[in-house]
Amino acid sequence: MARPSNTLADGVVVLSPLGWDDVEPYLAGEDAELVRWLNGGRGNRATVRAHVRRAIERWADDGPKLSFGIRVDGGSVLAGTIDAELDRGAGRAGLAYGIYPAFRRRGLATRAVRLASRYLAERGDVHGISIDVDPANVPSIGVARRAGFRFVRHVVDDEGDFDRYELVVRAPVVPAPPPLPRHGRR
Image 1: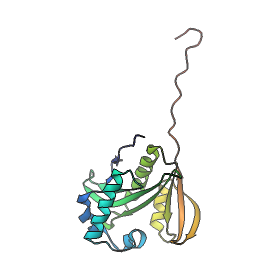
Image 2: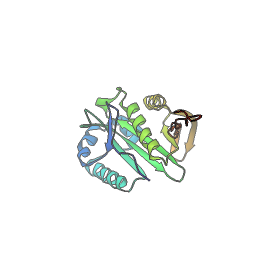
Image 3: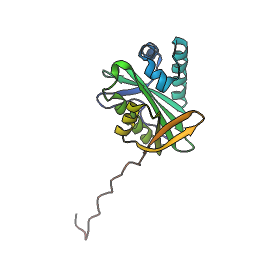
Image 4: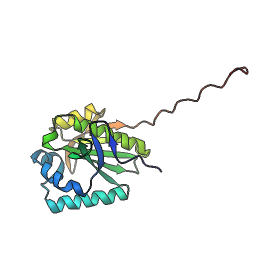
């Protein structure tokens, strides 16, 4: 199956796979909010390098987890990350995202979620996308809603409790062919 380009842009945000040049900006951008809501612990050069190495390998293998850098300034500045976790058997994907402090409150996360959702829809093997959000993470709830995701349920499992937001991926509409001429007219 042909895959869409793994670099996406909307005129403000560029999404492209994480690479080795992202290690230092990744470390510099990590703060207490990212650790709390996304990372689960502070990174160091070795752990971030290992993460980037796995990200590069997973892109080469087409998943199951695909890590994008969220970039601004024409793609030259790393402003955060967004991961798409594929569940091919279920035709679903989950998104997780974080924006570095200097770039927050500009709508970049919402733009990144929309771009990643478009990428997943264009793949053809994803029919539903979810975002799991801690109910106390009000900014992330806003991102999910602004990107078109709808609350579906509160989940309690062995990893904690969270609210699940979902987006149904619809197949692109193909226009009907023009009608054939009637009665020999053109």
